[in-house]
Length: 597
Image (tube, rainbow, N blue to C red; front, side, top):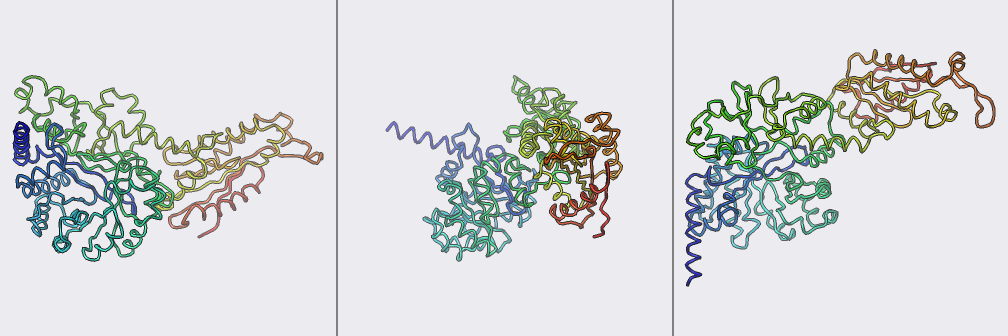
């Protein structure tokens, strides 16, 4: 009897909690958005939405929330609140791509009315219908729902211009029998299914067969539960259109504009054929930009405090007047101040500017990474917590976090170190080819210089590899000094071969300067007698005396005008020819390609 009373009391508490949530959904229900990566085009395909109760409430989990709502006959009301709240949040925070809305809160009695509810909610939120994907999880749980009813519900959604996605069974062969009847636009491999497979075995699994079949019919497949790089790479080879999971990005209260650094890199390399754009591509600040809506200076402090309460992942909010940021309100400062006795009563209706940092760290989105790092390193410690404002020509764009910056910089440094030449620390073959391909794809003009040392091998044989290494370092330093670090690129192919990729318009003058500098400094490696006679005599491998000229630098340049070359492979053929022409000229020499294309 006592146990029955406790259960009844628990139900009453849950009922009261649910009523509170539904009374003001924006305060009682927490929304989360999980990014879905676009494996075909790169970037974000959309965001998978979910809701749950506050962490300190009995109804914190979605499953318990839905169960109690059904028990109390409130599932219809919960579904309407859920759809409206998610769409309004998605639009308010300018979510990218599609909104993937699971219909697990739909009561059976609503039936085909579901489509009308979604269309109305989308209209009120200002969300175009074509950006909404309704995930009909009834297809993935047909034990309690006849197939015909699922088909009618899916058809009603499609007739009103909404895309439909459907979950799948753990058995792909059984699931394949259903698609002909339901004809969804997207097929969803749900969370937990991929856990049953070792990543490399997925290539020969029934899911690989399904992916090929449905991709050929125009149906796109989205895989959830991607938790590792190897899993992502396997899916990229299986004609999977989208992917979500812990490796791609975690659920957050505000739709993110970026994937995890590792996922972004892997997807960008695949999309661009192994060449992620650097110069001429997405700046590091663009990748980590969080487009968090700002508040006006006259906004009440209570409203900003409520914003932080509704969005636990929100670290800071910018205060903007006429598109120009004037301050930054840190979550920690705001909560710490407002949590003290009587602060709500004293300051709640006062302007939020009382709590803002009037000297926030603000950086332009085009700021070079080297300067950005310098700014952050010398910034006040408070900025390490609150982050910084990102602007474009002084106008507010969003907010960036130091944590994201460190992650991106670390990833870039690891990438650079992976392919760097161990002697000069300059980028090697892979980054050189990627950089050239990026500029060619972007149709940006550049001049590619192939640099080589003349008579270097006999110098190495006579003076030893240690002095030879010194000459290589000298060459690397000279070439680096004549380049503009912001727009030009210096790479070390290996040995005594270097590649310069100029976007500086005065590239010819820079090459001539490099030849002068090298010609002056290389003399320090030879005696006065050798310099006077222009070389030195030594025995070759056959014991015969042989004259060798002083080591010189030859540079062959190819101008790559937009549309002239398709890849670095075509450039390398011409570059090798012009380098040979340059080496045919005595002494330090420059030869520019004369052919017309």
